[in-house]
Length: 276
Image (cartoon, rainbow, N blue to C red; front, side, top):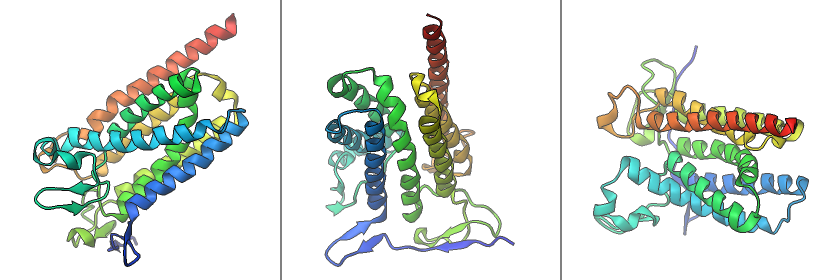
């Protein structure tokens, strides 16, 4: 029989003079692992490794800025008026000064921020078609997403709906005594499978030669995962609990369509170039 798991972690690793927050640690792991994955790709493609330093800066800034701005726009617009400095700084200033860390991050906002940053990187640094870097960066992004969701689980945030059974996780840190779906782990596990698929397609098949194909596959599958996992998640805003589709699902639909369109265009262009 399945039984609920009681989850009651601390907020991080207490060093006495400083606490390493789990969520921040997971982001650090995500970026560090991404760097090594990109390095392997650059070596294979005979790309200058010095380009990686700028790529890392572009990715870190765009991910954090886009994710934070996306969260505020989609879920917490009042911060623009009540505590505007907290939008981009890891501090709260209202009602009193407090270190909060980088919390309140939206993956849809991060996606938009990364897309803009990679387009600029391709034009200013890489000097080639943006599709090339998009096709390759999705591999470390899918791997990093695994740890981001694990960080959410460790923080007892973005929790799932109540299971109404003995199965699930009891998030004691949230003052609860009933099990919920560990939606964060569902999503993390699905991203692991997505990463393995993309990794295999890039390293073991010639599909990387079809410009835009890997990006299209990543985009369509990733947001399909997000769409279905959202059925198990608790709405981030109480007034949206009764919505047929929540905010995350509504935002995911156009993302899936973009991915499918990119796949179609990639196949069409590949067949066109092959016939010439």
